[in-house]
Length: 386
Image (cartoon, rainbow, N blue to C red; front, side):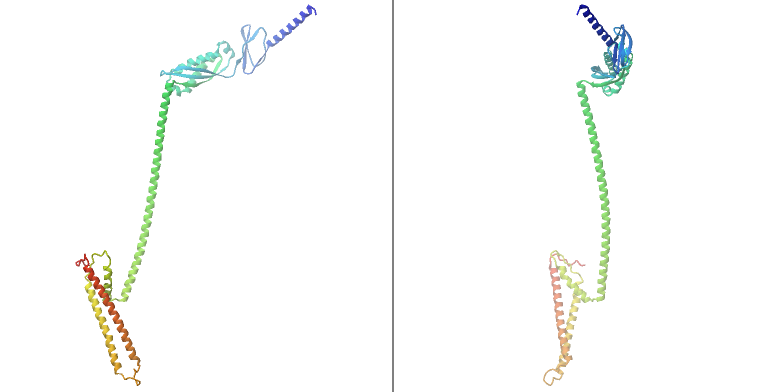
């Protein structure tokens, strides 16, 4: 191959490379939410929108792409002095968005740095008018103040500040310790108050319960006493009715029996030994009616003797009649029923009379002995009479 052919091939290759480079510089693809600034011969020409764009090579220059999305930038902690001369460290977070790529490119050299310095100065101005307590409790107020100042200042830069957030507010360690102690004391105070309120409510409820229980117990006792009284009343009424009926029956029986003075005296003497019985009976009272009772009993005994003599006389008469009668022919009694009946009646009457007299004498002796023992006992008072 000669020299001319070689030079021609090189020229063709160079032309092809030039054409390819020119085409590459002429065609630009702009991504979505991006913007490109075109400078023609060093001056602003236009803003490229997302999509395929043709520029003039070697004449137009495309600056670095600008992101149109909302962006977040966090600034390092900044020391700020409060109104009460306390140094606090504040971390801020800025949410901003580029609205005008031309202004963001030509109005400020570095809008990120400008936003940071503007945030620091504005934050110091706002916090300088607040004390520590208000600073810690007024985050929303500080955020709104910062956002208003930054949005107004960055508007001419083609930037819109959407939000400003205080990420952290750190007071000095000594102040933090004091605040923790204060908070702990306040919480202990509230806990003590709540505990006292709980104890108070518990005592009130317990007292109310005891009151209700006492009222119910009193009501129950009242009803029980009323029912017991009603039952006792009914029992006494029934008991009184029974005793009245018993007394009436005894009274009727006594009147139907028509007892005489002799029987009453005899019953009176029978009760004297029972009155004298018992170790505790140190004083025994002899009633004044004992003499009359003994007189009546003596009269009764005389009548018993008289009654006993009458059967003997009748028996005697019967024997005389029997002796005067004629004996039977065979030398024995004639066996008349009148004589046999008289003899048997006489014997029975005599036996009954003897038994009655013996019993009366024994009872009279026992009564007299009991009276003598009672009168001889220590502590006997003859002057006391019923």
